[in-house]
Image (tube, rainbow over all chains, first blue to last red; front, side, top):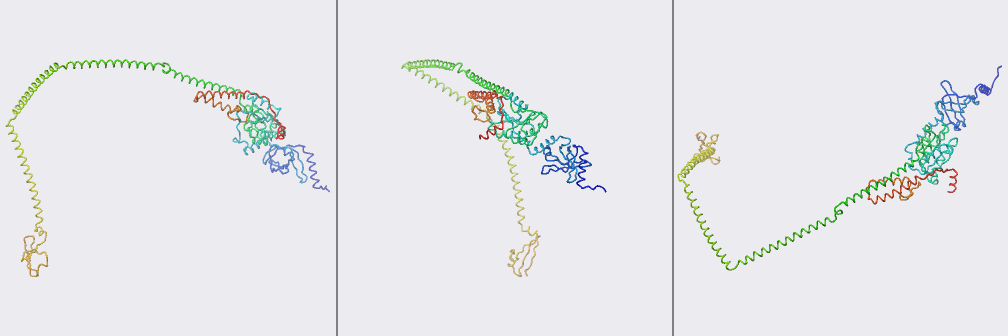
Length: 490
Length: 78
């Protein structure tokens, strides 16, 4: 008689056998399917490969440490132990650690979070704030004991020594780091005024492993950075490390030293620029002074300033010349007046009775002489006239005259004949016209066309009215060709 | 220092002072203003340069540390 087992007994036997024969810890590779996260926080999934599958479970305590979100189809490395779930007699894999195969868990977590936040717009360029050119106060969120704070302060002291540096000490690695960093960022924003104004924040730490830098990949930090009203430079690790903080920050610096360089200008350079500005001002003013001086010099060169008496001298000279001319004019006028006076007195002296008589006598004989000459001229003119007439008389020949008359007579005769002929022609034409018109008026012409003239034989009157004749009257009709037809009215 | 003061106040931020200085230097260089005004501006510019230099030559090498206690202090006081 074989042993009879209960179900529970068999399952228990399987469990014992399994536990005895399988290694305490197994790491297996497979693909996730049927992934489900229960509200309790436990994860349920199936691990499978091409030929087989195995149910898996991950308790909340382990699941909460997962940096990435498992998903169906994901290739994973799962570590844990195989056991039997007795209530269902089911072999299950109890997962203690789950990692993506191929990429590391953190790497995947980074990618997933980055993707999520990018979609939300946390990395948008449009959201990024410009850095202040000349920050007066910079708050630094980092570890008080790390290399970062040292690098930052050293660099700031070298470049921009007057800046106020506020250190907000936080843990930059370990469980609490992310929360502390996020809190610090929000705290500084909130207390900005009380802190005397904060122009800029540097958030970061020095280099370390991916796990060390992890707090800067946490969502809570990224959101605090995104929400900050104060511009933030993120500076985490070395050049190669890029964190979520870097992506969310307004400016990413490769290292803490680089962050300080980005944060502040070089005072020495600004001092040089000031020097230069001063020089430019001095030059500007000097140039203007020189220009003004040149202008004044140019004005001073003008004649009015260099030879102030010249104008006066010229006028003096003109005056002198006028005086000379005036003197000359006056003396000339005096001289002329003297001469005139002299002449007049000479005339007056000459008008003495004797002198006057002599003058009259002279004038008389002059008149006599003129008369004589005029008469002579008159005689000569007459003589010339007569000579002209006789010359013209000699030129007139009567024979010539007769010849001329004859010529013109012949001419007139010709014209007369011509005119006569023309007149006769015109009369002839007129006569012909009248003849034609008369012919048209001849009653016989009408007879030619077939009409006849009827007369009363007794009276010879032309009958134009039928009432005027009576039966028995003799009438004579005249036809075209001299035919007369006698008829009797019936 | 970050608090903005009126234009003529000597408590200008470095940025404000620099901007004013830039304008003055340009005005003087272009020579479009009368000499008297130039000289006035020059003096103003020199004051700004002095102000900027004072800011630049301040060396505040120490670091202040903010603590959460400070926050709770201020919260209590406010």
